[in-house]
Image (tube, one colour):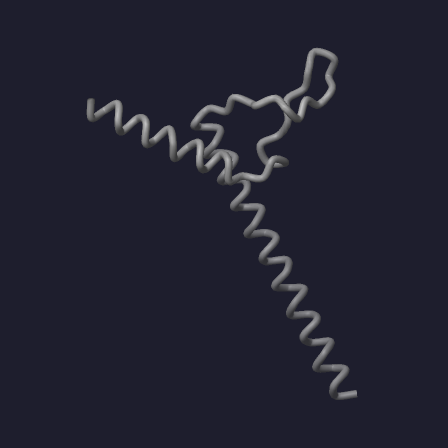
Length: 84
């Protein structure tokens, strides 16, 4: 009984993690004609959920670093323009 409750909670947490990922990270299913079926729910294993979440976090970290570099360059431009 305790194990079933544990599995139920764990499965719920994986579902929550998967639903928090953007759709473009999870991907879309295609029908038998190769068309994207946006209404189809893709069955994703627990291992795949973890891999997708890791990739998404790494992408967010890269984006953050890029934005910080852009901000620094813009701040330098502002300082340079103030001095001009």
